Amino acid sequence: MVSVAILAAVLSATAICLIFLGLHRLMASEVDIAARLGSAPAPRRQQSLEQRASPISAKMDRAIARYDFASHIQRELARANLRMTVSEYLVANAACIVGLAALALIITRSPAGTLAGGVVGFYLPRLYIGHRQKARLKAFNYQLADTILLIANALRSGYSLLQSLELVSREAPEPSSEEFSRVVREVSLGLTPEEALAHLVRRIDSEDLDLMVTAINVQHEVGGNLSQILDTIAGTIRERVRVKGEIKSLTAQQTLSGYVISLLPVGLGFILYLMNSKYMMQLFSTEKVICFPAIVLPICSAVLIVLGFMAMRKITNIEV
Image (spheres, rainbow, N blue to C red):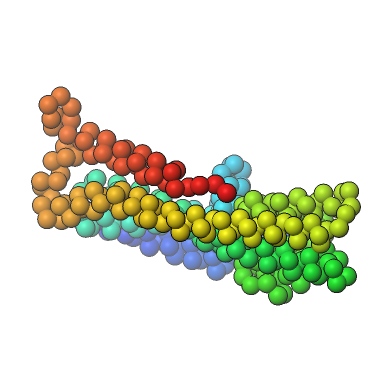
């Protein structure tokens, strides 16, 4: 009992230290716009940033930048519109792992519960980032047809492409206005419109946006009536959005059934564990039932539940 309390205290203290380290890193650092855009920063600006940043933060940034996963994490944070560096995200993720592991240890007082809390803490920030990405992408796709029509009308009235994008950044709702304002800002910092639009496609993983940017690039190379091309693309996108809405309404019941059927055994098992923990923990023992350990039963059940859920999601996920 004493060892469990000591371990819980150590994990809680570590989580608190990591949280304060992340807050200090977030408040002490300044965002270098040139570095985020991929352009060469000014030497004086870079030196001032390194002098203001703490030695630990600077070392973490330099050490993490050498690995391939740093660029992947940075791209995911940009798609979720989270203004965090990779080191800040890793510190927050470590704090979440240790904090939930300590909380699970205090509640369950078992190594299995502590491990489960750590696993949940590891995946919780990723689920949050994925949720923000999906919500932002969904909002952007629903606004894209109106945004393209706004660009096409601005081109007809005599605006240039850059002026049309600037008009979108002022008139369009979020998140379209913010993303196109980044494009305009990147062009004003020295990037070509093609490079700025390529960065936009990298931040917003949308097939419709990729179609629009490809049409703009092709028109820039071979010429043509860009406003008419954008009108055609906007009509296509509107039709796709309408069909997707109909499919989503028709498959809503099947999607909900997949979640209910998949979560029902998990919830029932958790309720039985709260009612009689000794009875449920027999499933996680190494005692042999007939010819195999009892722990094989929950493992196989979890695998089958995941496979069934993936199969139902695959059936209801109709591409348009």
